[in-house]
Image (tube, rainbow, N blue to C red; front, side):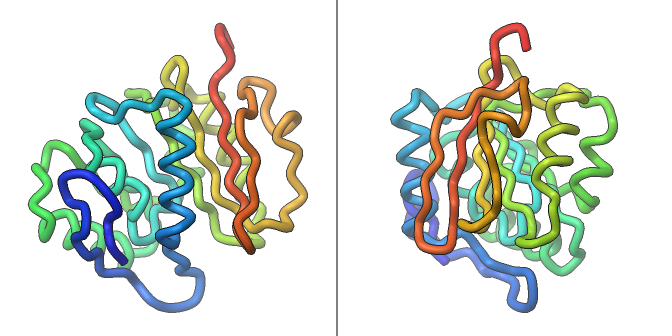
Length: 190
């Protein structure tokens, strides 16, 4: 898998193989980043949280485009180690990235010590993780004011972006084949 744009554009990321791994494909990633940038996301200086990171392709893309820092949250040891190796191979400064090898909802259940400007959520299909992940991220202060939450889920997932979390405002809901991308932003004072 290749990074699309930015400092590391064209560089290849190694990806894990096996059940449950489905790296964000290039066309979907390109569409997602286009949606984010057309809605005012300017990467330099932003802090990114990549939940259910898998290969970390979304956060690596954000770092390549100038994000200041990215946290990769991935419970699987094999995938977490692969993210570390990819970051080192790309030569990304160690202070710009952190791998958190932990279950996303266990991490988010704790009060945040820092906030993030862009949060990617790509939970395993069919496991019902999206709602608790959104709820915990909002409730425990993981989102900066004006943060954007970008969710990648299966196209057929019954999901009402308007009702999923009252603290978030849906701004995009698009389907690409078997993948659905939903973007939310934080409500003012909310």
